[in-house]
Image (cartoon, rainbow, N blue to C red; front, side, top):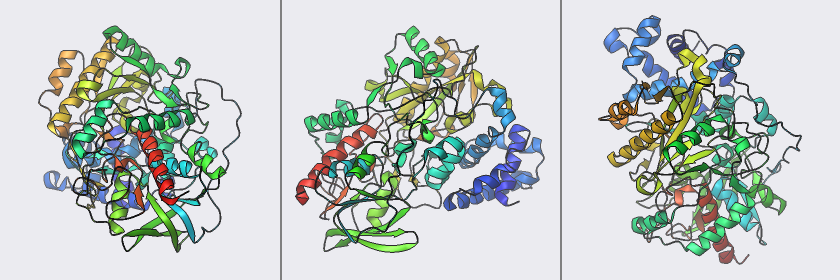
Amino acid sequence: MDITERVLSAISKAELGEDVVSGNYEESKKSLDKGAAKFLKFASTILDMAPMISKFNTFTKLNEHERMDWLEKNREGFLGDIIFLLGYYISGWAYVDENRAKAIGYQHRSTLKPVAKFQPSKKLSHEGKPKDRYDVVIVGSGAGGAAVAYELSKHNLSVAVFEAGSEPTEEEFLNDLPINRGTKYFWESGLTFVNGNPSITIPIGKVLGGTVTLNSGTLYRMPQFGLTNWSKQAGINIDSNALNSAYAEVEKRLNVMRVPDELLGNNAMIVRRGAEKLGLVHHATSRPLGTCYGNGECAFGCPYHGKLDMRLTFLSDAVAKGVEIFTSADVKKVIIKEGKAAGVKVNIGGNDLEISAKAVVVSTGAFHTPRLLSISGVKNKNLGKHLHVHPMAAVAGLMEEKVFAWRGTMQSYAVEDLINDWHTVLLATFPPPALSYTEGLPLHDFKELPYFTTLGVQTSDEGEGEVKRTLIGLGDYNVNDGDLEKIKKGIELSSNILFSAGAKKVLLLLKRPKYVDSMSEVVGSLEGLHSNSFRLAGYHPMSSARMGSDKDVGVLDKDGRVYGTSNLYVADASMMPASTILNPQLTINALSLIIADGINKELGG
């Protein structure tokens, strides 16, 4: 038994009174990313040695009472972040056990509607070797890269897409448990985060279709005041007519519509009930709606095509028109010659290849795009800076009735009263049990899980972080005081909604989860809390290679072109001049269509 398994088993016995690690850990290691395995070993070693200072013994050698006592005293700070990240696996494995799942009524692949037969998707990735030369090479297949491929495929241009991740199948989505899909399809098996007070987990897709394959699917157009802020922050003025036209095209292709009542699930219905009593602005969210049956596993890949992701839309359209996609293709650098992008160096199947191109589009996301540009020789003081993440907290309500909140479409309902003044939206969602922020629910008394409902508090951050290499983590990011106040405001309103909907108690999902019985207790509990007391996730990293009026303000011009390098473009979340205020996918898609149109005109396609 290695150090990771020993520590995870010791935590499990202390927190749950039983070992849910043995067996599950061995199975998980088969698909565990090498970087994640190294981090788990590093984190486990730190946690095991930490009690030596006060207990004169390692964590694994303490008795279970001493372990629990030590864990409770170290929920906050750096050690608290480690406890939380290690606990992610423990909580996920807790529900692999059939008896535990049966006791709460959780069934993998359960749906709100009967599932009709459907034809699995055709394989999109190319089996053979890429050509030596293309008109355009796109690095990454997410919201940006897929939209560029789609737009360029309309013209007489040869295009190749290189994706570092694999191409998933419906069979994998159907047969693998959500935690195992997360281990397989996220960078570093989902253990990606930024260091700060607190550290913030940020899952990033490493799979065909990028993070869109694994997101909740909520789509918003950016508010007009967001565009105004882009102009103030970075001197970028986007043609609103062109943007609205691109929005409309994306919405039509993705079949964007509000979630129907039959697919909302009880979690959303409870939020609706509370919002109605308070007279709030609330409605079902807009999503790329396919053949949705309310499976409730949207953020781990939908096996039923319920969420029209990039694979099922832009990428399939592009392949039908001749675009070639290569998966498990690791682009090492962009080849730049005499100030001009000339192609890429890519490893496919263990072979290093040089592929020439007239233009290169980097679409690897807010963390990997700055690194790839830097490795390729791009120099700009803004590269990796201005990082936004949309920090998200959560609140749970303990209801009188059974909710089974994981049944139904994820992130299916929104309360929008705080958007204009507080740049915060409340989203009703309940991930599969013990994954994401539901990990903070009381596993030691797991039979209460069916009675919980949850609301996420998503804030558009004014504070900024930085993408950079660190010993662990993807970079640095600290929540500033103004953003912390917005998060608290969102938690207060969420609590009020849940109480108004009939919650017996509200559980504040802080690093030290706390039950409260009234709104006055909510306010009192939040008063004076520092950022390090909050358990936060970030699902929308952006702006780390942002557009700016010139190279002193940004990395890219308004056409997505890298300053100082001809024919090198960026089309992903990193290009945003500042926060999109709300969920960014639709804006990434739309801006990428506009950038692709410019590339086509540049190349004369």
